Image (cartoon, rainbow, N blue to C red; front, top):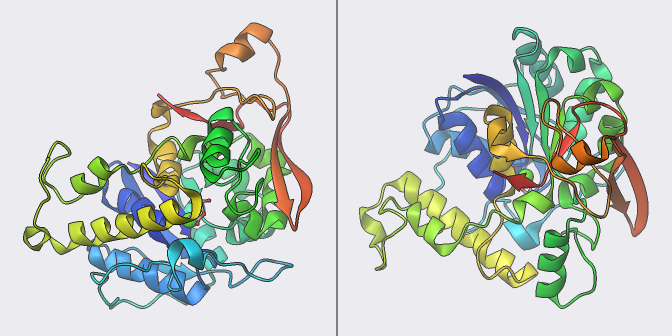
Length: 347
Ligand code: BDR
Ligand code: CA
């Protein structure tokens, strides 16, 4: 199995990322660090512990990380995830195992990841990048030791995303979700994102799961009902009393997410499943295909250049827009390296 450390701000889609990382036999989950984001750090840490309790993985150590960005006020997303970060379910168990505090979150991440053989372990982040940037600031050599860094964040501006967000909201061009151009995780701590994206040792092994991909993976009503365990083909409304608490928990989680995504963004077909895709990219990279985006240049994967790259025979710049307070800054993810990549399509 692939060794993974998960850094998250447990809200609705992070809960699915945890489920995937903690319950697939293909992954050995080394630990989880939490960050502010969807709600305050206290909430996201509580939610993380509660989810692990629900899925019977209280053996996974949880460390509370950053309470706020390096140089800004923290931002939260109550309009999407509720005040608690995980509103909408009555099935969340009370956590029985406290977060660990023997060392800091950054130290715990470092110890767990550096204890793995070189080139084997992945760091997956599905929240603001404060902890992750802090980790590489403190331990720069870890970049060479890791197999990869998979991040859910950013919006490159693929036509699909732009059309989806723009058309549904009746707006002009729009491909971010927190502002017209900014994706929430990057928006929360753009300085942390910039620190990571400008680190040449990391560009070589970073996989960026942007909204361009995640907006193609909607938890449709069939998928939602499938969570209840009656199979996705079921036509009639199942009686949820007969369903296990864990299934009901995840059903309620996705339902709340569907409701807010529909109200706030007009996603009537179901909410995007952002965060689990970043976990999947770490242990099933074969499922992902990197392809060019029109607006912001081209990217490439080690060993499998996108068709257009093959034709043109050259690698071009790949930028991710980082937007704060209406100002555009650009974080250069990858200019000439061989394997930094963004994923915009799943095979
Ligand atoms: C990202 O923002 C958060 O609200 C979600 O959990 C996800 O990680 C999507 O932009
Ligand atoms: Ca998240």
